[in-house]
Length: 412
Image 1 (spheres, rainbow, N blue to C red):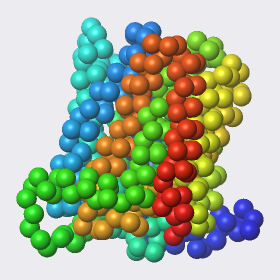
Image 2 (cartoon, helix red, strand yellow; image 1 turned 135 degrees about the vertical axis):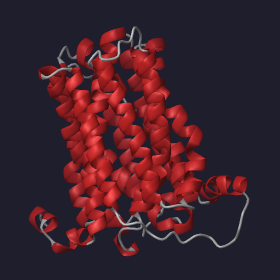
Image 3 (cartoon, rainbow, N blue to C red; image 1 turned 120 degrees about the vertical axis):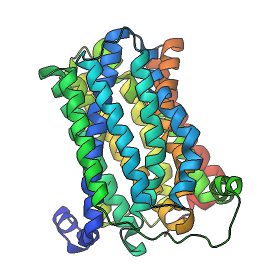
Image 4 (cartoon, helix red, strand yellow; image 1 turned 180 degrees about the horizontal axis):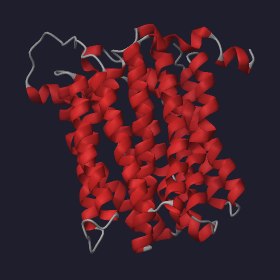
């Protein structure tokens, strides 16, 4: 198999025969661009104000806590009501919060501390808490079941590609146009993405006919995940890796204090992991890792942790870029395998609730990981904190290989 046959085979593109999937992916691209631009700008702005790594961690905590608080109820709603409408109205709230960040940066609304910024981020976390379960559950309604692995791979591909462009664009906008222009660009992209979600046709939800109490409905997703060793192990493995192994939140500190580069290079550092993931995800769109999927997942998490250790020890900008690109390669494999596991092993009437549990495990682990990174960098130092986190990711991969035989032997 060569790259040409991989990327230009009709088989790889059959998911795009479905118009609503095309709309969903287009919205995904715009929203990912917006989130990356906004996050890069937000982290750069807050670090410029405070000069404190812990302040970067507080951004993640401010977004994660509300998302976690509403996750189970959001999953319940996604399994009971129109998923498209839930996703759309969540994005409307996200549009409002993005506009306020622009108003702060443009000094239309004067702020004397970072508290108003954290408050807006907190509200955006509420929006994200409702959007993610609805969005994940909606995607599975847009293509036939047999195409789930390909839809997961393409979803990952465009997410990674948009992350590259978004992170780099954020750095360029900060450097050449300023923080307020960067925030306004994110606001406009979110609005465009919400419009595309609105164009998707509403889908019928195949509910479980049995009437169950609200509390039982809220907890059924948790019970399902904990009763399935494969799903639980995959979520736990990724949670540990992202919670302790990530270093993205600390990139402003690495850029200024270790690598001695400016906002444009900082944007490329943010983009590097996704850049490394694009080719991998494109290949996986044609040939998803369904054979020995569990081993691919375990190997990818271990490789990601090793990359974080090497990145922490690097003092050269270009070497750091390469290492981060390889971390994206491993992360891409992990994302595609885990998403495929979720789609194939979850009943349709429970997708929202199981996705909500996934949000609690994985969706908020990036933000909680940002908080953990900020705290550990404050306590033991920047480089030691990232080395320790990468080591924990490697150990978690080895532990999963030993303790989760169903995941280790998983093939589809």
